[in-house]
Image (tube, rainbow, N blue to C red):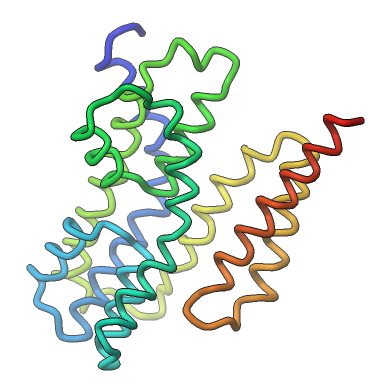
Length: 231
């Protein structure tokens, strides 16, 4: 595969198994938006414009509870703060692209697209990949799956039996992303520390437990790598 289209398709193919977790997430998101009074078209439009998954759900719940606009915006920013780390990590692979493409790539950035692309770029033969095309293929697959399932959830959410409890698929999706990346001791330590702290810090307000766990995992992995390289 040497042309951009084939690399784009390769990214889409790599991302497609993760739709198993993304589609139930989108269905839930669409159904919840409508359940709190948002019109079906509004739920679908919000999904396309914001395209932020978990923070959409939290923002809608806060608006339904009549939280102030500042609280809604701040909470959404905190939840999505992890994207700063994603951007800093993957940016070296997109050096030299135009500002407009950077904006487009930023809009499409998700946990899944980042994890799949970053892992592929760092493989032994990652230098032969058309990175922009591969990323767009993976990211558009996530974008299409999430927004289409949100649309379906918005218009059919009322008929989904509540006992199905589809949100179990969300943590499974993230587990499927993390496990293949645990290839050495620093990565294992980082994953264990982040996992333990995410549970212990879950009572923290404004979802700060997520950021606390992420920072602790990064620090653990960094220190472990330094010690390993220094013997």
